[in-house]
Length: 310
Image (cartoon, rainbow, N blue to C red; front, side, top):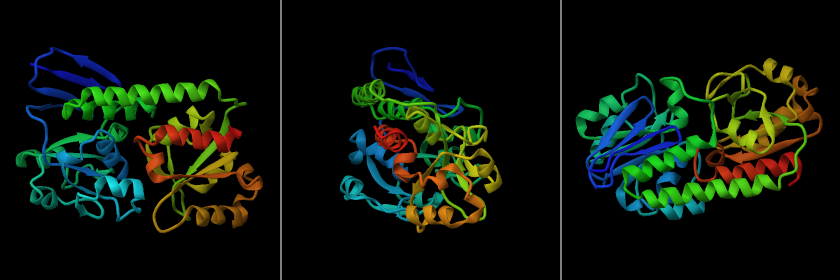
């Protein structure tokens, strides 16, 4: 019997025979007695994790992408054989109607605490749920965001779908690529960085538990909202002005373009004294780069280039 228990970044291997696989999903242990064959993923970054592991043939569809942002050509080619079952969050009926046996989602990534789609509401219909590690903060404590969150999800998916070696190879490759990059990265004192996701009356941003905090730190910066003890959430502009960020990272998705978000900050007199505005220091990350997924290492490089020019 093979029994795996995967916690945040740690792998425990019980035996070598093939049988049940148990992974830790947020505050639950979930046991799989067979490899899912009718999986559904929600959101673009979670779907990319499935694709990078070569799991398209184990999927019956995906949800929550076109309603928020647009698939790029790379993603489109990976999922061209799969239907999008819901443009935004799926209903329980959508998942049941697709005869799904697995749902890869997260809290505020396709599921809401107290909503109709949760691990508990799907269990009676034979649909197991694996939850995105970054999102676990919504239902319990976890360490601050780190790239280990993404590595953990890749490894857990590898265990669930019994493509362990592929998952381990990917994670080892990501770690080696990041280490090589950081070895040659020339930085100064950590730059003060604000993440502008959306919103004009109040900005929606990334806090201590959101992946951009880890990406910014890996690139030699500090998220000025790392005292905001949430993953993604709304703050007020007064706090941003007080923090005086030197760089603004714009998360690019949805109807308002990154350039429109930059223009909003550049043209508003309330932000005129912010160093990032005075020096016109903005950098855009695509949504799929800023959320946990295979593009996170490239995102670190993009940020580093904007921060330090290397």
